[in-house]
Image (cartoon, rainbow, N blue to C red; front, side, top):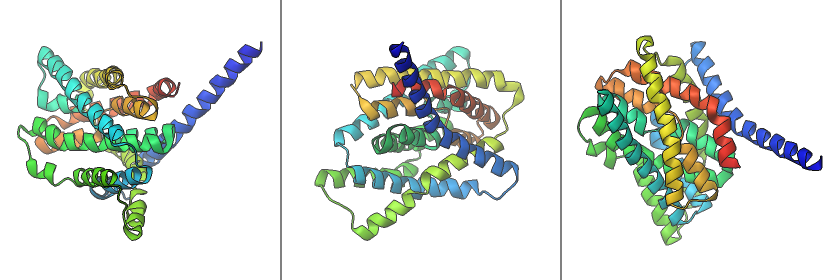
Length: 307
């Protein structure tokens, strides 16, 4: 009898912990969704630029320099993100070839998960500062790959200027150098970076909700979008399990890597499809469908990484 009560108590604690992680992401994204439906002002272009080019680099610097994780932990997350993109890219390309579907349209949406809007807050709420630091390193790597390899796949050519000029790359270089040299930012710079980093996570979650409200999937191709969305989520999770075992990741770093890799299709994939004329309505379908499925499966994902 006491054993059963203990098991029920453990389940109740686990469910409460899962709800605590999911609720902020869901509620703030819902706020963004209904904000847009009420036609209230929200400049997505400005918010995206601010979050990507100012907030994200500041968040990376503030988080890594405050927690000062081992360089090996950061390199593990860089390796995990890179392997995830390479392996899912190869699997996705093989599937698209088999189904005779255009690679520039669908492959970026299979390769690049939503490591920013969803992955960072979920990792932070699940594992605290350690999860946040790992998730930010993963997100920074994914951003570099998306704005280099992702654009190359979508457009057919590599834009080196966007890669070299990415603020996230330079923030990562500075963070690694300062940890390696055991340096600290002056207080006035550190405080400024800390304040700017605070805007990123709320803006990302609000932007996710607004994006879901504005995306208009093509009804005629929703079945195909659904299939590729399921593949993105399933392949991301399975490949992540293999990666964390090969890299021997443990604790919050392992959990953050699995969460980040299992996220739905990134909204940036839709923006690239729109820019390069790669069937944006179908890519929008992948973003919306994979996000809705991901929200439904989040309790199972979190139960796994938190157990």
